[in-house]
Length: 94
Image (cartoon, rainbow, N blue to C red; front, side, top):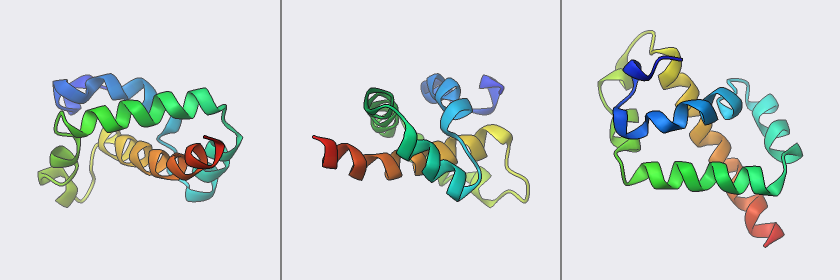
């Protein structure tokens, strides 16, 4: 993935997007359900922190209308969906 395709403030998410940016919904759900709690907590915290750095402004910006968004855009979008799946599990395990 190319950091030039994402705002520099959220480029730190790219390694997480490579792991958690799973395009298939069922595969993403399975990955979250089988992951270690600490890994999920770190992922969710990174996504939550990025919210203050303009993550969702970028995701709802011009590229959201592209016929073919960048691989990075898609992967980070899927990363946010993985974080959404992880939050209830983390609450259950708290």
